Length: 229
Image (tube, rainbow, N blue to C red; front, side):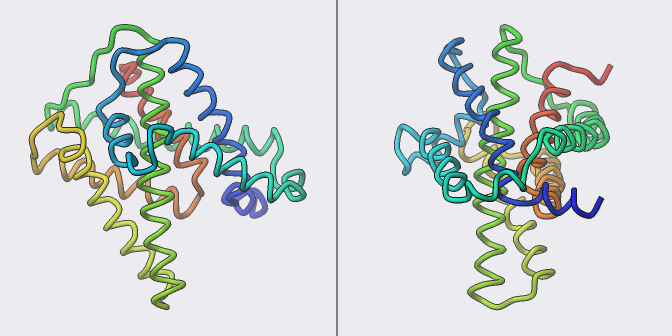
C-alpha cells in the first residue's frame, strides 16, 4: 500500500496517466467542434492567454518533454494496474464528495446544472474543465506557491501547504466570477467553490496531479449527467 501511495504521487506517473486524457479531449474538440465550451474552460484559456493560442500544445509538449527526459524511469514508475488504481481511487473520491457538494450547490444554493445540447458536449465540458482547472490552479498555482514558500522562503512544509491550499482556493473560486463573466459575485457561491477548491487542492497535495484531475472529471460527470438520482 505504501508503494502504491508513493508511486501514484510521482510526477512521472501523473503525466503518464493524464496525457492520454488530454489528447482524447483535444481530439474530441476537433471531431465534435462544440459551438461553446464551458465557462470554466473558456476562462482557463483567457487565464493562460499569455502562452498564446496553442496553450494545449504547450501543456502537452511540456508533459512529453518531461517524460522523454525521464524515459529510463517510466518502466518502474507506471503500470496498467497502477493506472487502474488511480482511476478507482479518483472515482471513489468523486462518488463520496461529489454528491455532497452537488446537493449543496443544486439544493441549498439553488445553483443550476448546465444543460448542454448533447452528451458529446457534456463529456468535453467535464473533461476539459477537470484537466485545465487542475493544471492551472492546483499544479501551477498551489504547487508553485508551495515551492516558493518551502524552497525560496524556507518555510515549513505544513504551513506552506496550508497557505498554498487556502490562497489557491480563493483564486479558484474568484476565477469563476471574474474570468468567466458568466455570473455575478455571490458569497454563497464563493464559499461553495472555495470549499471545493480546498478539497481538490488537498487531493493534489496528498495524492498527486493525476488523481486530482480524474477526481475532478468524475465529479463533473456526476453533476452534468445528474447521476445523483
